[in-house]
Length: 149
Image (cartoon, rainbow, N blue to C red; front, side):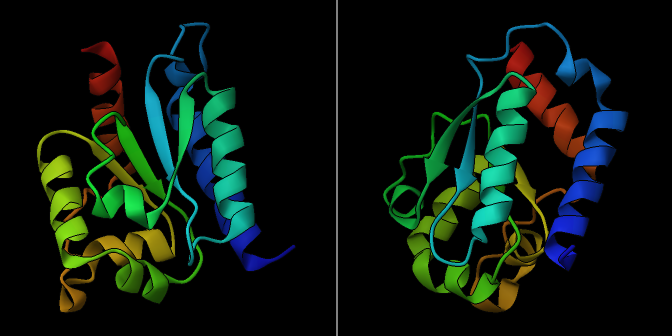
């Protein structure tokens, strides 16, 4: 099994154990999770995330760099940047797109990043510097708050 799959399976296992309420019978389909699928995102990571979020009851939308750059992410309660290769994230998302993403997170949208997606959120050298909350419990508390309100 590849390292990417092992890491992803550990993250999924953690989420399923730590957040049993999200896997309940509550209808979460009205709450949208954006999953980044553009260059840099490893297809198996983004595909598995889409399946996981749908299994948890959320609706999902595939997000590409032009969505972030153009400000078309306002409808998502959370955005997920999967593992893969962070330089394409940095290169394809413009400074204006990074600023929009930062503003969305500051205004309550949850940012979830694993591996390259987590590195992208913290890479201030390239002005991504989203300053996303890296604690799973706090991130999912924000998702739950978005879903409740």
